[in-house]
Image 1: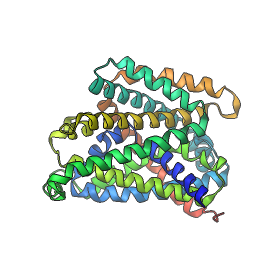
Image 2: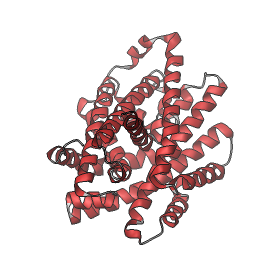
Image 3: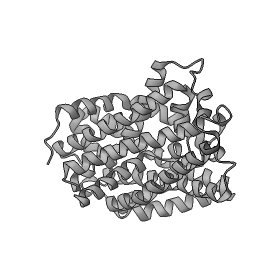
Length: 353
């Protein structure tokens, strides 16, 4: 029982770590997809947790039933050859772009906090990413087992520190409904947010049932991951709302929000945000390498190295612009597949083991 619980927490942490990347941990994603909608954003944010849980459980069920343990086999067996090949290409492209965006986020952290040139931020994250992915899924689980509890603790402490003097009533003036906001648009953006994050998580989620046979551990891991993402997003959203609208033009909202905190805490926050950037880079590279080295045509480690090196040029572009352009685009392309996964997963539900 204890062993299964620990395994569930590791699965949940890996799920959270895959989703919480540069955009999420820095507050940029939460701001663009929830905070700008005020009260509507608060409601859709809570709904997002249920979407994450239901979809992750569905992916585990489908992956196990179809014996599809990388995202290419998963989408091709689920959707058929033509549609599956389309989504295979889309996921491959956006995992590659996601890796570049994580590297770009690393550059922002090193530039903002340590006043170092971008090349240092890129070099450090590239080397550490390769060290982790060379260990395959065990490296992925180990990285997230450390980083996810750390970022969770820092976000909780930041929330306590921010509201201990102001109290939660400071939120009420900011939880109105902006003039251009609508319930439909807020819901649609929430589904964008869930869709692209879940799509980018497919490479990790589909790999778990191959090595982890306990259905209960997988289901509990999905719940821990989805619920944890919802709670962290809620706290981040609350912090962002208290600094609206000044925070809207910031690349790293959490850094701006904690500008008045003790310098040591701000450095801890920066390191945690960087850690989540790193964990998502590990997840993206692992997913790509697991797909591209399929059938043992290419060496897994060689593929990992090639992915990291090829991701560097795009990472030199502005981080905020990359998030604003690519994430909504990928969300739009992902919606059909995520809806189909939820539908098929319920229809193909397996008996617990």
